[in-house]
Image (cartoon, rainbow, N blue to C red; front, side, top):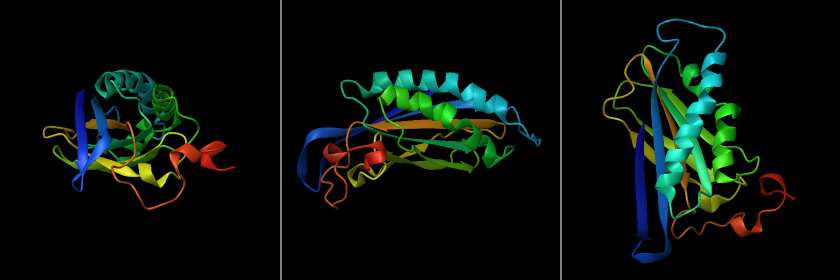
Amino acid sequence: MLTAVEESRHEAWIEADMPLRKVAVTAVIKNLFANRYEANLGPLIDASAEIGREMAELARAAMRPYQAVSYGKGAVVGTAGEQEHGVAMLTTVFGDVLREFAGGGKAWISSVTKRGPAGTSIDVPLAHKDALYVRSHYDTMTVTLPDAPLADEIAVVCCYANRGRLNARVGGLRAEDIVGEDGLS
């Protein structure tokens, strides 16, 4: 497990009223299906819940004193695996654990997966926990593990942020105006 914290206190020479804290927790796990095709990826999906809980607890500690209001998820699959193995780790089973931690509704959780060798970077997309259409919370967190994933591993990532982008001003649905499911009336 690796936890990274990024905190921005100003943007474009303007001091933030509240810093933007982004937290990424990465779990590097053995890929049960490295070097072989398996039709049933259920074991990866099932394992993602427990891994997600452990990751969310680490994220909670790193996010203090703030609360998570946006999130995203990602995975980098080592070269002996398939991209589908990373997708299996990020299904609704994993997503529901992330939602529970953030107190989010049923909004879609942005995600990204890819294959790559150790040292591959991944840009995990972030969006508001209650409404995907809140533009101020569209953001990313870049995660790089210099020594993972090895060919037979999967690096699973969850990211959280305590607010939207600093100086966000491109319009759209505002967080304080969210109504109904996914911000729609």
